[in-house]
Length: 382
Image 1: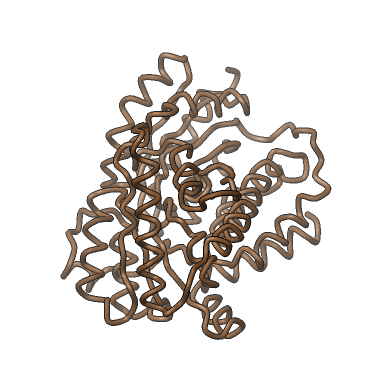
Image 2 (image 1 turned 45 degrees about the horizontal axis):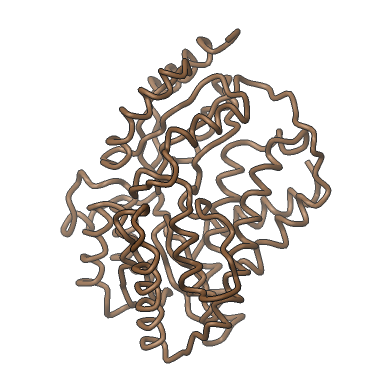
């Protein structure tokens, strides 16, 4: 693998293994700069960039959950449990604010709990996204909500966010989205084919923690001389969908390649990759709202502009995958609600599928490995 890739992977591994160390270093390099955590689906991070801040994705991780159970039920999804445990333990004290999207009942619950128990450490606010994206009122509603959130941050940190600053931040946001997509496209080339799913998840996750000015140049340098020809991949090509806002443990992700599968398309970090490029001219709040309305469909929000199964089938056909794996977080009601409908549509299209549930932490049953191996065997020759 190239020196550029090795450098990128080394940086991203360090950042994802010690995210708050990176945040601390960024704040040291940017005196007065504010770090704003966000739950890992669509949150308008451009507002944070416009105030000279650092948006920080909160992904949970390997931690024994104990204190969090005094505030939340054990049947909430693992990212809600682990991030709450980290927050109560003081791991996020370096943050200046945390923004939550109302993507599900668990997210709304944890936002309220953090407001009650952690507001003395950082500002906690909810970005109230519209319930429907196909309503004519959605864009105006969301634009007003983004102005409200901006005002809350301005008041808390005694800063002013001008529309010109927000337009500049939209350009930065577009650069970051382009970096994500160019990296995903690079993985389909002869060189990028050697990248494992674990490595890809590490690199994409780092982009939700690092400032775009630190992250984007590394990706852009990597893909600058990309070979446009697709590789003949080892393993049976599949698409993985249904991850929502959680990330399986690295040991879990490593199973795909070891069981004879090759993931060519996935929903890793789709929440931060879903929106298209946003127009930078004109009213920045309206433009951000329009970008959200046009974003790719997810289970965690109603979407009327494109149906989720249509996008899934398009992705499967684009990479010529032989099957689809629904990787669904345990206790994630939105994903489980969508699952039956998606299974019906893929069956109608004669695409084999497999359903596996997961949680964030380590520990993989032998049954999961056996099921992946069996699925790979059934796809051979199709």
